[in-house]
Amino acid sequence: MKAVRFHEYGDESVLQVDEVDRPEATGHDVVVEVAGAGVNPVDTYFREGAYEPFQLPMIPGVDVAGEVVAVSEYVDDYAVGDRVVGTGLSMNHLGAYAEYAAVPEDRLAQLPESVDPVAAGGAGVAAVTAWRALVDHAGLEPAESVLVHGGSGGVGHAAVQLAAATGAHVVTTAAPTYHDRLEALGADAVFDYASEDLADRVVDETGGVDVVLDHRLDDYLQFDADVAATGARVVGIGENDPAVGFSNDGVARSKDVSYQFMSMFNTPRLAEPLARVAYLMGEGDLAIDVARTYDLDEAADAQVDVMAESFFGKLVITP
Image (cartoon, rainbow, N blue to C red):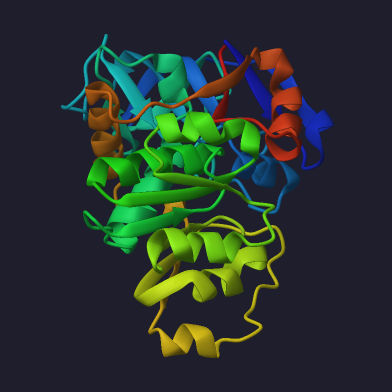
């Protein structure tokens, strides 16, 4: 089969398409014919060596969706022909930038027939991170207010929909060109992230936010405290600069604000949030917007674009 691999760490130029053996269904793996493999910033971290994969050469790609073509004798819950969605590859398992991928069964969920497998290929990191942040860590409840920074991004647009599905009052930020699309996904208010009075507008809309999902802690850690309600929960999922800090932590202390920093890779059993995400996609309550698709030989372009360009939703490789 054809697979994208990197044989050494480096920039996108180290990615190449190789002819390799198709994986076999051993242990608790199933083999999936890949319909879509989501492109995520974390894929570039593995390629650069900032996150160390378990071997070189390495096939990148954390997310996958497609059809099962082989099943290990130790797997009971999946059969040849099943449509599946998965995530959590790359760190200790070969990834999904390939025509076929072997995926552990505890990182898979059944994909409803109504869901486009290409779009589902971009669901894993985005939707599971959003679920873990809002539901598992923040405990978001109906009628609470939630601020999703960067609502047009992969995690952001999934989080807006998940928050709306819970019955929360959803506020998000994005460039003006994406406001109408986010309102269509369930956002109650969408503000330009570049507005000088952004904090005032968020507080005027909510009276103080109960939950914040923050993907750029280096920019918004203090902002989150400033717009928080008493007892608010802030979940941090990333930053551009690891040197994050408060200019006035007294604001957070005075409101008893709780902070949780998380990584999707620490999810105890990825199959559980994946199953909930797949159910919501099947019910029409969650849709992954695919901004662009790429062939295997365009993987380098995809990894450049995921870090450099502004786009709505997800980028997906379609082998």
